[in-house]
Image (cartoon, rainbow over all chains, first blue to last red):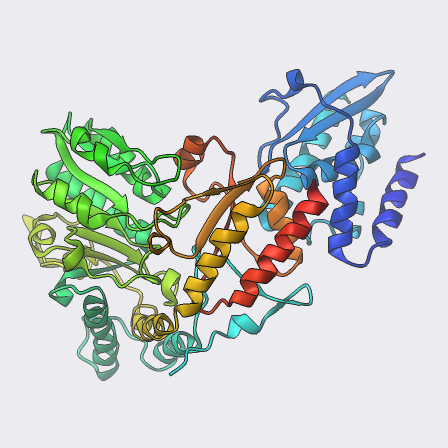
Amino acid sequence: MTLEESKQSVIDDFSMFDEWLDKYSYLIELGKKLDTFPESLKTDERLIKGCQSRVWLNAEMRDGALVFTADSDAIITKGIISLLIGVYSGRRPEEIASDDFAWIEEIGLKENLSPTRAGGLMAMIERIKELARNEH
Amino acid sequence: MVPVFPQLSEKVYGKSLVYLDNAATSLRPQSVIDKWTEISAKKNSNLHRAVHKIASEATEEYENARKIVAEFIGADSPSQIVFTSGTTASLNLLTFSFGEAFVGAGDEIIIAGSEHHSNIVPWQMLCERKGASIKVLPVDENGRLQIELLPSLISQKTKIVCVAQVSNVLGLINPIDKIVEICHSQNIPVAVDGAQAVAHLEVDVKSLGCDFYAFSGHKMYAAPGTGVLYGSRDWLDRLPPYMGGGEMIQTVRWSGTTYAKAPQRFEAGTQNISGVPTWGPAIEAVRHLRKNDGEMEEIRDYLLAELPAIDGLRLYGIPSSREEKIPLFSFAIDGVHHEDLALILDKMGIAVRSGQMCAEPLMDRFGVTGMLRASFAPYNTLKEAEYFVESLHKAIAMLR
């Protein structure tokens, strides 16, 4: 799937639900399905600041692509980071760095989170961009 | 007159709002909104200074509020009521003024282990400036203050003891009278944070016997940006000013300045002209709502029974008898993050608080990263409490 196709797939999935409670259920399921993250990777450098719950994001270069893995102690946050890395993991750093992340506005995630949580989402996006720029 | 709270009829996500974040801030009755509007629209003028008609009306409203507040908490005189912007400002004022005059290197301050950051951080800042230190009066597993340890914490160097009447996390009513008895037998003053108490309990500063009592208006229906520091006559007169500026002086010369008496000594600068007069209608609302408090007790008893019955739920702040708890419930649930719960409940129309609730040392005491808190006010109903429990069950099922 191309980056654009991957984004569209998330937008389509999200638009299946009318109620925000159902969208949360979807995020919760995504969070539960996220691969196990090794405890040894839960370091301060991988911790994303600005989130009320704790989020760790790890990035590794594999064959020219940036592979993300992540974890959180809160399940909805875990669903959100799962959504993000599902779209961006395995892509070339320059592709990620030059992306506008506008699809997040399109699914309305930001407006439906509390300001502290929305701040956390922005911090996750910033970290993904930063990691991509560093490898770029 | 029955107070009407317009925000109660608001909808969130198409659902009726169930507001259970009253410990953070209460809703405002129409009478408070009307008073604020009336002053802003018709009586806006700076206080105490000018001779014109509007200035005297604004000043009268402001000083009348002082009388109402003094009577409300049983103070001997309105001059013992210092207006501030809230409990935090009251405690910062106290810490600075008291600390400047009475705390030196090597001195000790005793603070309860369940305090809000507002009753911790200003004292830590003072200790850093003065080379003093803090001793903690711990809470037990149930969240009850271990008063029996207080005498052993007190030393020759103890300058003041600081405690909330009701903890903002535990909702337990602390035995202020006993603390005061122990402290006064050693001539040590007691400062009480009353922020969570005033909307729920009949407060009488004389029968409590405390030397200082701080509280906010916004947690008891008054305008935000209103607060009070009560001080016993003896102590207030001995405290140096906190902020310098207009209205707090007697005479100002290049050779030196003399200060006004309390409370003006502590009210430098332009005060909350529109907000302070809302203490009147807010106190009226408190009195009215207290008369119908039968339902509050039902809510408290219902939740004290229902919450601990939830699988994996740990309730913090378990009273030795029901009367020792206000309807404020903080808890954590095994395997479920407090923030996830708050997000789901929000979508169900329920406003609750999640996180550390400005009491990190207490979170550390119980070994949690945060809690969920539901805090009720007299305008909440038993029906809402039942909806809360039902929704909580649903949210847990979604998250587990």
